[in-house]
Image (cartoon, rainbow, N blue to C red):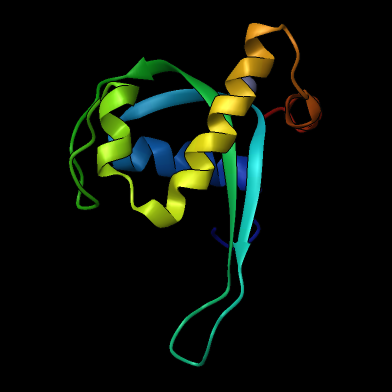
Length: 114
Ligand SMILES: [Zn+2]
């Protein structure tokens, strides 16, 4: 995050910078944190947003080469340590299938005209 940047602004900016695509954020899927184990590492806080692409053209950046992948192929590429995030996403998607989800971030973004 940049100084004085809202987490939703960070997500929009980073996605655009790293993929070339514009997105519309809907809501938070999950929040994860890791506490530093020592002086050589930082504590982290990660927000995972549910979003949809609404513009731009996918392109590479200094961060890497973005690409779409089938979910069935993703599990083979994901580090086992992060598999729980994929499980959380699957549970989130089930809520969508039932027509249920939390809209807290959508309301906050609308109030801030983001
Ligand atoms: Zn969602």
